Length: 481
Image 1 (cartoon, rainbow, N blue to C red):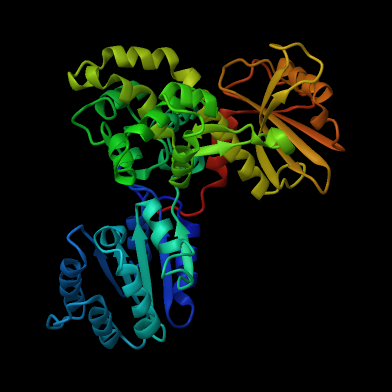
Image 2: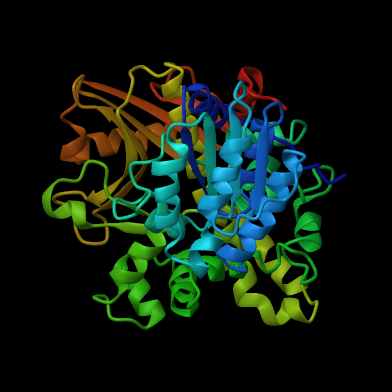
């Protein structure tokens, strides 16, 4: 059966909202995050036992939305509809009717829709906060799915609303820990496959039937032209990027393995000097992430790589977008064959993300040999080796500069990995790479889908995917609703 959409592990966000709400006087919270990530459900859970007015904006403009909101407010107060025709008049009415002994929540969802039609709405709201709300016991919450719009017009220093908010909450997609909770009976390998294909959006995950194989779920959803997820990737991009064609080509190039500026520019047909404009915008929208060698200094710090930040979008760009002609004519079989041939390789980056999240989890719990302050990837050249044999990459390096402690971890999405061979490779790099030799305390971890045989004699800690899932399930995820 398809999972019912459920509220999973948003306790830290609820705690932030509660602290803001319980502070005396006026509270102003900004909630932002990508479409489908669960912002509205978060607010619904928060106001479940509180006095609240909730309104979702549309694109009809400020005046039409004021009329709709005033009807909802009058209904909430069981009152005649007021004559208020401006936001200021409407909030004055709400303040006059608000209970004196119970802090009222006023939640306005999809606030960017108002900004699209009327850029002055932020200035109007700033005046309302400063003259009408600031001395009242009211909790104003603004929500928005357009990350770019929320950052530019609400959160950034140039916004009239800058400095007015008391709390901001970014609602992010689930990580592997929450996906494990979402599917309590799914096996470990299937969880990684599901995470790598459907990502961490609760809305997407609800369409996954845990009792069906991955490819049946794909045929019923992402590869089915009648399903909402089939066109979700393009819809997401066009919501944030109205002129999306060049951005789409950039994203597709990255999804298909072009990670350096020169490679991406070549695939897209742009000059390398023109590309940063597009990359910076995509970074700001959190659609791609930029990584640099974690131990880089000076010139080597400029050797950046780019990756798609969202697992579902990466899958959609890699397998759906290039095969639209086949899928439009309901001929998914060649696409499924392509996915089956390359999926395990595709999931390599997913497993890197899973193990990176797990290292953060262990660090928070104090279960590593030291508390790291920095975690990232490392790559570069080995001095003295001939061209073609002098490149190296390390999936994870974590360190604490003060304690001169370093942790080196490799992640292989393969079965029957030889732990001795993995450890030997890391030991070889420790000797060959100068930046790895200057640490007093060195620790090794090997991650794999499975190991051939656990070796207690190795210095490397061996962790497979079953260990990670079992640990998450035994520790729980905090909030279970």
